[in-house]
Image (cartoon, rainbow, N blue to C red; front, side, top):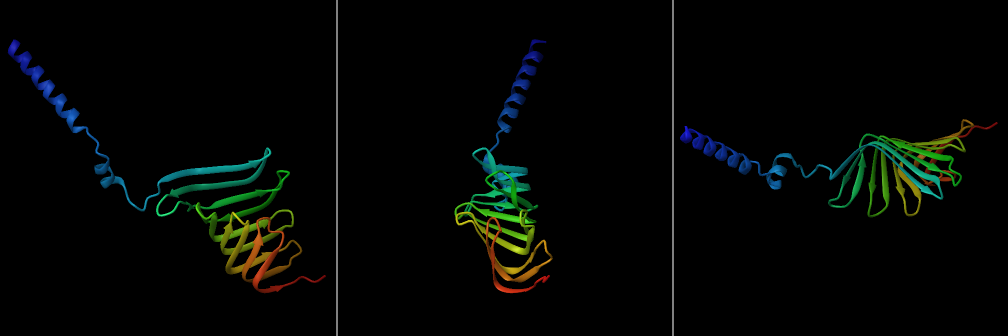
Length: 184
């Protein structure tokens, strides 16, 4: 009886040692199975960021998916759409920028928006539509070399190839203007 009990203890000890030894997780082995170099370093869903100044909202960013990559340079991609609201000093919505794709380049302060880009000035009721828009956060300049349509509240329609404007979209300059004007 005593021999069976010792055999049982030896068997139990052996199994326990094997289990403890086999449970080692080598990070390099795990990465071989689950890591892809093209995967983002960080992934966030349903993101809402608000930048404030003196208690008032200045910029609000919303996106369904945010993916951050740190190599070769730090950039954030918004593959499932992005909305940016810009506010006046009093906290009222001044303009809204939407796109189906967005990208922020952290080192340069550049932002790129693609696919169904729309910039709307709420106060002047003007809408800019294009397929690609660049925003330099350092200079607050917005521009595109692509086709652009600007619609005004009075029915005026301006279009052309390329545009330069400011963040508030109060004034703009077409690179190669074309257009229709509504004359009363």
